[in-house]
Image (cartoon, rainbow, N blue to C red; front, side, top):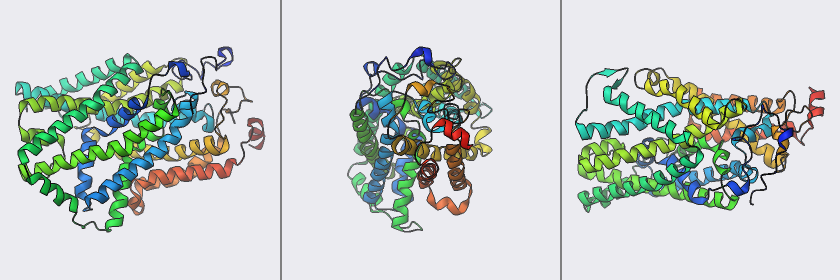
Length: 490
């Protein structure tokens, strides 16, 4: 289904300036430049981080599962996420709106600020952390070129570490300040570039390891069968772990799909970028890890450790650029674009996409700078994970509302209207029934983070929380109740 949005859809005189700016407005079809390749690279950049490589490699080792079963679990997780983002991305392709505007449909034109700001807080936190991790790649490069490793530290970082962190922080500001088009170009460069270098690294290690590499791959692939819960539990855990990895982008996927020319291209990009892309990346991680066993006598799943052991300056330089590009890429996808739109939705008349991005970068600076010395030591990640869990019911509410309650029909004009009789104004701009559904489902989502008895659910807690949110919402809403009637009932 192609976009139904044209440049004439919004009657500017009737919109409320507290709900509208050009960055939040629907993107008309004729101004969209993204195709399947751009969507593919969104997912490529989301998996190709230092953590993404470590996760993919460790899945073949940690759970003692047969390699084919691990690969099947990874592909299954990719298909699950693909279905979820096809559902959340479709309305934004059709109507050209970002996630916080889409949230107005179910949560209310004012109530949408609640899930938007929760998503923004989570993203800003991890934006700072990922900025630090990206800076470690630049630190690796500088130390390799100038032999400056070591030295005194201040708040957990050496002088080179502080310089690297500041450079990466400024580079990301420079990148997003030029707008979404520059972000698109960077993602399109980083995705293929990282793959090329990863393949070269695999070939180099294979050449050094020789025939022993295939036998080691076979040994890892055979599995040990030592996972406590048995093979079925191991399979479900691997699948859930991969689902949890991608869950952060699921709810705000419309921030990217709104730029796509058609729903067909979005779905092709999701197919290539999720199950197929994740399987291929995991395949490379498996072979490189097997090669490290042959060459160094131990399984290395951290790319930085592998590069240090290879000890070749040209490879170190290339790898540093690669890790830098990969980590900045995931930061843009998962942690920059979402809060930029979410903050713009908070005060549209004062904050646009650029200002929202600048606020994100400024707030994230101390988080990344103090990550090693302080923040990583105080357990704040549990708080942030709790906020992330809160978003699960919101996803279910939004999807249920759009497909089952609203029957995929939206009034774009009223998404930017504060008229008390408007379709999405509900009660003082908040949909109380959505809040009730969220509150009930949120009890489970938050419990899944903090209650040890629910830890066995692993990555499935997000999906279950989303299903509960949608179920409770549908039960409460039934047929869509007009705004005036809902106010009288309240």
